[in-house]
Length: 304
Image (spheres, rainbow, N blue to C red):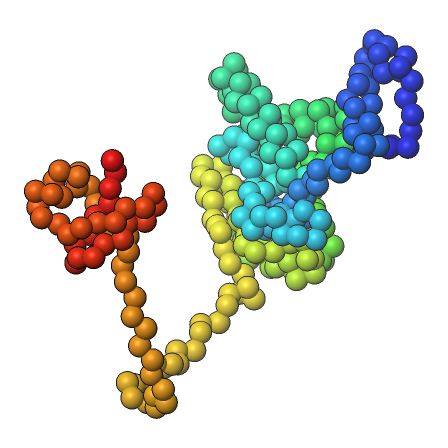
């Protein structure tokens, strides 16, 4: 992109596309300005349905290149009271896309007087992302419970969507989906679904350096929504330090040599004015712009 030249006509012509920012960015690169580093969520996100609802979860690590940029990144985003979205991709894009969806769904509920359905959020997300052809780095798992039951959808950055009983996305999804494919079964209860999602997330954290730190879960049913987190996986819990007594008793170490260094206090802040010092009978002071030297045991500072 930086090597491509754009004519003045291509930059300034009207129409549906405006390339002025592209020309600016290429000019900055030619001047040697380094573009900012994008913060990626790295990520393992997992969701699974069960007979009464669904469980969604994610890790909390965000990376900038090979650096851990944030250990407490929020990847479980609330859309409505009974609908959430887990995000993988670029952290800033995910925050803005989920905020936009949440605002649109809330306005829809206020205008219609009914709860928004999961397919509505999926439709709005895919229409928005498709316009940018994948340049918005937002990969979403959108799930919730509406009057038609629990639903889970996978939405890619290019607008492709798919309904699934379980799903995983992100750089750690290869390890996580192997756990889901092996252990998922229809008709699970809430405890089994939570345990499955947690094991899938831990597998993703084991197999991916960009996923880690803590886990966050949301359990969605028809009547309630329960958020759990942050949960520290068992393999991340540090062992308790061994309590050893490193304090030595007085006299345990023999003193071989002792040297006493005397020092004088030559500066002390005082709020006494000149006339107050004279009335109180303080000793003679020798003044310096920054340091006060004194012959008596009393100390003073001249602010005159």
